[in-house]
Image (cartoon, rainbow, N blue to C red):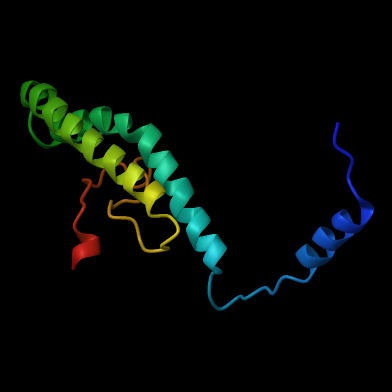
Amino acid sequence: MYTFKPVAVALVLTLGAYTPISHAEESYLSRVGDKFLGGVANMFTGLAEVPKNLIDVTNKTNPVVGATGGLINGTLQTVGRTASGVFDIITSPIPTESMVEPKYVWTEFDRPTSYGGTFK
């Protein structure tokens, strides 16, 4: 059984209380955490691209094309979003923007998913 040393607990609480807060720019840890959590979300919710694309393609064309084309496009977008999530998790110590737009599958549900914003 572990026992906490009061000095160690006091040191951790003191350091936590005196961390600088910057309102002008996000901190490194905030950006790393945001990228990591976005990667986890995209890795596990990538499958939602299938119904998203079924609805999107059906609304733009007809139900037959929406069922087949939306399923194919949604499957490809699922692979892309999941791979982007894995990539974001691996590269989360480098706080860059995610490759996938929109950032999460449930934001801007009617907007098509794209992967090119990072490389412009």
